[in-house]
Image 1 (cartoon, rainbow, N blue to C red):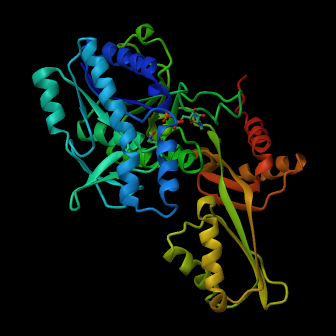
Image 2 (image 1 turned 180 degrees about the vertical axis):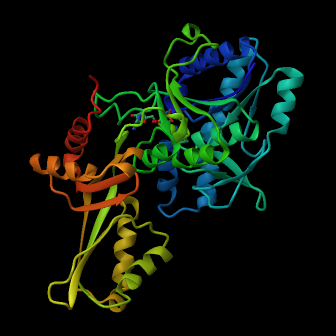
Image 3 (image 1 turned 30 degrees about the horizontal axis):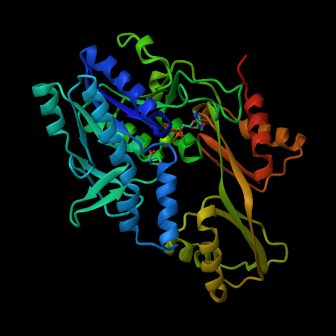
Length: 417
Ligand code: ADP
Ligand code: ASP
Ligand code: MG
């Protein structure tokens, strides 16, 4: 007997047929004698629709009311799955975030989980063999008593947090791909599924654009040592032997991976914008005058490139921000123009960041240099570069994203043989 968390994403619960399919996956595990907590997302497209309604209501809306609206998608699927499971003769009960409760801070729309109470779930596993069906993505701010949500893709984080709280043996993330690939298989058909990926690498892949797992869920998994397994919900539920090792990708400690490649995967993100400040005063305190106000406005700055000044008096400074914050960032810099002292501000939103990730980079030199040469041969211009211990990123024109990802995927020997 094992204790499992089974999380199903939006495409896996997109309609009643898919919800019935999910129920059959759950039945298989229950019949095998396992204790099961299921975490569900909203039906595919539902959260987008709810977000759009909030924006239509008022472009600058109250985040507490946004959460009240967008949390509703998961309420529907949790109740529906419980109904379908009960119809199949399985004891099941749905749980909203506030009912468990899943406590979070009060950063509405991007809340972080602070505490999950799993006592009642465990009691019901033991006393009634009851399956818990939990609405993902949502929580409760204890002090105000208001509903919160965990940021887009947040059901992954609900699942991992619940797995930690109930000491689950495994947290299965069922999705529309059968594991974590060397890059998005929708963009590169030659991408290969990874049997295992280290937490650190998954953290980088997720934060640099691979949306298969929400970043925060990987962080939580790493801290609480949760065995996270990414697998497909589109396999015939009855064809899986619950006692055999399932097909998919295990996210685990680096030490559990025998053969470490230099490059594990490639991620990309088109949600980037570039801002260049021309002829900035080249004197102490200027970087603080630029990045201080951006930080105060809660804008995350990512890549920063400052040219060496040619005349000793002025220089150019380029940085990137999330495209959603582009206008706000421009306005913030504009307001601080007197303190900063610059000539002109240029910006671009048609840029993309392509990142190469691998723990093996720690012990191999020249990994990035190879990429620069290969992109140059493809006539892809690099606007900015950043590197860290286990990854490097290049900023390019977004029109060349797919070509750049494919080129690097082949370059590092990741293509399916
Ligand atoms: P869910 O609704 O189940 O949470 P998501 O759409 O959030 O699913 O995430 C799954 C998607 O992530 C896949 O369909 C795939 O296109 C995308 N993806 C991006 N990068 C990767 C990767 N490296 N490996 C697997 N999937 C990836
Ligand atoms: N339904 C939410 C979203 O679309 C949460 C999730 O799917 O994980 O972002
Ligand atoms: Mg997701």
